[in-house]
Length: 541
Image 1 (cartoon, rainbow, N blue to C red):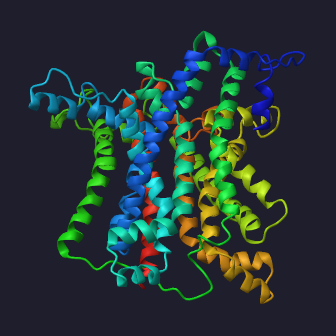
Image 2 (image 1 turned 180 degrees about the horizontal axis):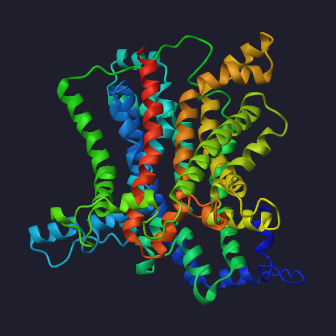
C-alpha cells in the first residue's frame, strides 16, 4: 500500500532516471468531473445493489439451513454459485441471457417480442450476476453466527407468544448484527474492486465502475499509465476505508454486547419443528437458489466445453471430450504443461488459506481478546487492504519485489496472494472472536494457561466452523485470482486462473471453458469433503 501511494505521485513508472514527484495525476483525475461522477454513480448503484441482493439471500439461506436443515447435506450445494469462477459464470449467463442467449431467444419467441425486455449488459444485469455469485459468501459469513445462537433466547421468545417472523426480527437479527455488518462491509468493499463482471457486462455499453475503469481506462490504449491507475486506486482505498474503520471501531466498543458464546451453559441453537409442507417449501427454495445461481450457468459452460460447435445445439455427433483429453496430453490449444500448472495451483491453494487463517485469528485474538497495545493498529492494517483493488495490490507487489530473488518464482505469487487472503481471513476471525466473548478466555488465563495455550485449547475449537468457512473462501479466492496472479507469474509459476485468462485472450474459447470447469471442480470438491466430515462428526457418524 505504501508503494501504491508513493508511485501515485511519481511522474512516470517504471523509473528510469531521477525521481520527480507531482500532483498532476490527481489534478487530471478530479479535473475530469463528468467521468468521475459517472464512474462513482455507476459504482454505487452496482455495489449497493449487489450488497443488498447478496446480504438478503445469504442471511435467508443461513437462517433456513440452521433452523430447518442443520443436518441436511443440501447445505453442501449452496457454495456452488461461488465455486464457479466469475469469468465462467459470466460466460454462462451470457450464453443464457445475452442478446442471443438461449433463455432470451426462447422468451422473445414465446411472447412474440422483437427484442428482450431486459439487457444483461446493464447495471441491473451486473447486479443480477454478481449478487447471485456473491450470495454464498454472505451465507458462509452469517451461518456460524446463526448456528451459535443460544437456544434459550428463542425458546423464551416463543414461550412469550412471539411468532417466528417476530423472533427473527427482534431476537436473531440483533444477535447476529456484527456478522451481518461485517458481511455487508466485506461484500461492499469486494464489489468495489471487482473487475470481471463490470468489464464484461458494463464496458461494452460504456458503463465504467471503480474496478473496470482501472484496466479499461487507465491501463489501456494510448492513456496507459501505471501512476494514473495507482492514483485512482488510492481514491478507491480512501472511499472504502471509511466503512472498514467504522466496523473496527464498532467491534472494539462492543463491550460484549454481541457475545453469543459465554462461560455459562446456554444450550444449542433451536431447530424449528414444522409441517411437512412448510419444510418442503423451504427445501424447494434452497434447491431453486442453487439451480438458478449455480446449476444454470455452470451447465451452460459445461455444455460449451463438450460441444464441438460454436453455437450450442443438440446434435449427438458434436459432443466430444477432446478439449479435456487435450489438457492432459498437452495438446489443448494454448496449454503446454498442464501438470505443472495444476501443481502450482494446489500449492497456492493449500499454503495461502492455512497460513492466512492462522494469522488472521492470531491478529484478532491479540486485538480483541488479550488487548495487546499494538493489536488495534495491526488489525486495522490487516483488514484495510481489503479495499485495495487487486490490480493495485499486484502492482504494489511487483514494484516492491521486481529487483529481488523472489521475482519470477512461485514465492512472490504466494506472498502476493497473502495480500488478497489476509483481509478475507480477518472478516471471518474478527466476528468469531467477538462472539466468543471474554468469559472463556479469562477463565483459562486465571487457571494458569498462557495466551498461546489459551488460543490453541480454547479459541481454535470454538471458532472451528469459522476457520473452515474462511479457509474454503480463501482457497476459492486464490486459486482463481487473476488481477494479482497475472502481474506476478512467470514461466514455470503459472496457475490455472492465469492460464484461463491467457487462453481467453488468445481466442481459445473451448479450452477456456474446459479450464473453467476444472477450476470450478477444484474449488467445490474440498469444501464439500470438509463440510461432509464436519456434519458426520456432529451427528456422531
